[in-house]
Length: 286
Image 1 (spheres, rainbow, N blue to C red):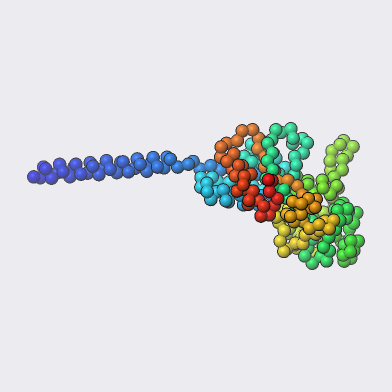
Image 2 (image 1 turned 90 degrees about the vertical axis):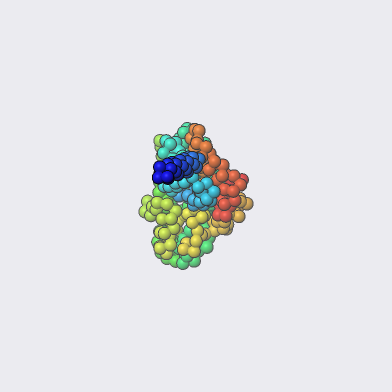
């Protein structure tokens, strides 16, 4: 009887071990069927960054294996990242320069954005014409009293070199010239405060009562005051109807063949779902 009991116990232990082995294998198989985690790198314009962050958040909610890593460090950096492969997708808030056109990049228009000319909320002015804005930023007009404000020096705040917002603003406001060699240079006044990023411009304007600067439309809030340009408010509606002229495209950039994951994210951003998110603050591309 003892021998029979021992044999039965051995048999039960064997069956248990087999069962455990089967469970472990099933778990392994289930684990193996999970999608591999993938990170998509998006690099470039600080103006485009809020739009991509909004889209990426919604995309990650339904694609748990995808992480979209976003670095807002300027349009020129975004163009270069797309070109040299340090980013899967580049972001630019301006059209490509002539030399950049030779990189062979594929351009996608994510949206259209306005550039708002802004002052401190305490400033009594509510509008300026384009010519006056240009004269302020070139230093031809230096005192607020020259444009109907108080007798005080104007503090000009501008973006850094390489910024897509600055490039578009310089172009629209005729703030560029060429030297004898044909190279472009900026006409923005030498003593302007140079701020890296839309957020830094906004912080400067919000903290300096006598300042004037420019930011992407999405950065507007109660801490700064947008001015009408040529009598037109900087709004999405006015960009859509074409009456507000200080606007530019938001570009997504790639080079060569992209991975299926990157292509799927681009399709989402440029498709109905992504464009529905975009239109809350910007003009959709379609």
